[in-house]
Amino acid sequence: MMNDNMKPLEREIKRLTNNKFEKQQKIAYFNLMLKEHPELINHIEIKPSCNCSHCIDIAENLDKYNDIEEWLGFNYKEYREEIIKAVQKDDFDLLLAMSAIEREAGKFTEEQIIELKKIMEVGFTKSKNLKEMAKEIDKKVKPNDLFKIKNGALLLGVTGLPILMISKEKRSISIIRTEVTRLASIGAENHYKSKGIKNVRWITSFGTRTCPECEALDNQIFNIGEGPRPQLHTNCRCMIVAVPGVGQ
Image 1 (cartoon, one colour):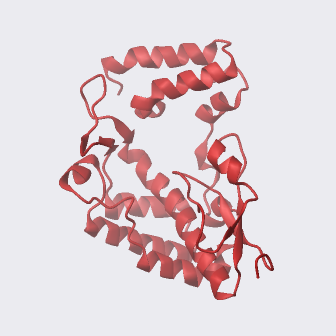
Image 2: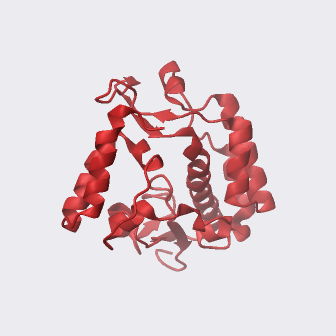
Image 3: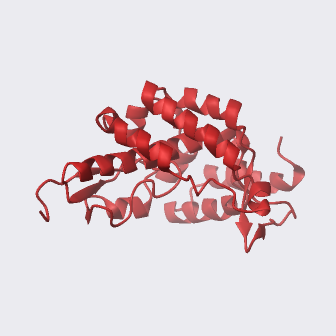
């Protein structure tokens, strides 16, 4: 249920959606309104009356990619052994709380990370779909709301409350999508390296939600172990592929 402090923001977003603003103005305004309160997206239903990509993104159903292979866009089973090794060795440091404040903000304890790693390993091994894995996270990891931190303290918004990054209801599927991409990328690169491949090519997943950073990286070639790698951001679906012969 949206509190009274959120209602003016909700009205502004609905007004903006239904008016014929220029595309760039609309994108900038949405970003401004949602920067402090991304939870608005979870509370309002927006039906865009225009066809600009940003409005379509807001109303887009993100559940169309359920199977791991559909999400990744390639047959990961060829690299599964290396992916499992990556799951076992990885520290999941972006999810792990390193202080009491980070735990309060919703980052995971070491015990939660252990449970998450078990879910990821079984998921890749048995080719579970993303929703099944997300349900396992809800049940066994039990994530809380995730709040923003700045300078070692919870960041407060204009309402005086901590600024929400993502609600606990949305975290599990977001974690699965993000970590599946990241770990599959690590496993694939380790597989390429074992085969003597020296270079990889970044392949961007294009769509209405493609970010400028990922778009700019498309088709760029990097040495093994160097340069950016998927996931570049939460819910990233980009991948790397081997480039035989280059630099060898």
